[in-house]
Length: 120
Image 1 (tube, rainbow, N blue to C red):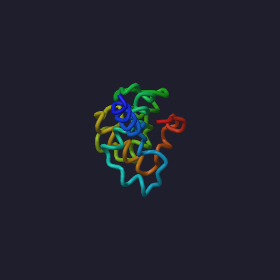
Image 2 (tube, rainbow, N blue to C red; image 1 turned 90 degrees about the horizontal axis):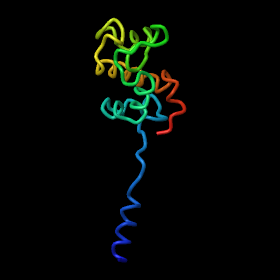
Image 3 (cartoon, helix red, strand yellow; image 1 turned 135 degrees about the horizontal axis):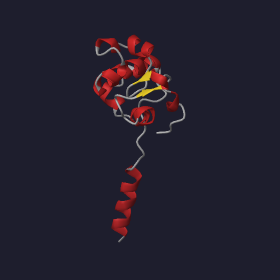
Image 4 (cartoon, rainbow, N blue to C red; image 1 turned 180 degrees about the vertical axis):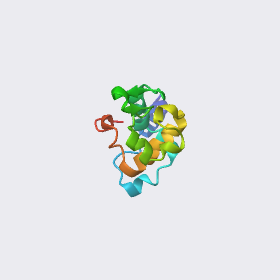
């Protein structure tokens, strides 16, 4: 029994809650985060859920906000979305993620207000 107790204690000390590597980074630090890490981060997953319920065709704000990330036309154009579709809700989910990632590289999570109070 004492051996089992020590093994459990050792294993228990290794378990940690995963942190979100996309949070509280400078613009330079954000450049080191790959698209794959970013799109699978707790914050990205949370925002896609709260912004659109993971619906790539979603339209909100009386048409002002489009797609999974609920971005406006200015964001879509600024971060290269027009090369995929006229507006976010007409692009594929992956294309929307790519555009959102470019926006995140430039501005962090600030374009998505729900990110401010999210605690991964």
